[in-house]
Image (cartoon, rainbow, N blue to C red):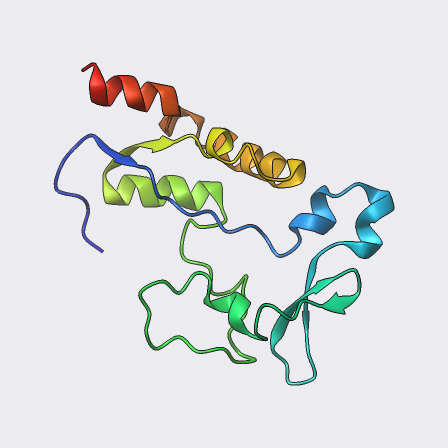
Length: 150
């Protein structure tokens, strides 16, 4: 993939995909038995399970399509797994730094600030993810000042 042609690019739409074990890793121990988790159904397709039951509002196998933006050939299947099909840098801060450098992106909008309405454990995950990228972040209010008061 070619790098951006201009220096000073700010990424305001970088997607982070949570690890499949997010809820097991960050939820209080007393609640982990009921945690959201990724399991497989009888057909071998990944499904979200909530409180021990399949989440029926998300089709079996479609979880692994979350990172397939732009790939019109992507289809659910037992061989397509969420954690194995994540785009480079979507769930790993070290990879994200490499990707930013490859693309010529100098700054990111602060995900934790934007995501402050999310459940605490997701914010904790994002905080850990963004801590590794802290020198690349531009807080939302800094972005506004940069755009409107150069």
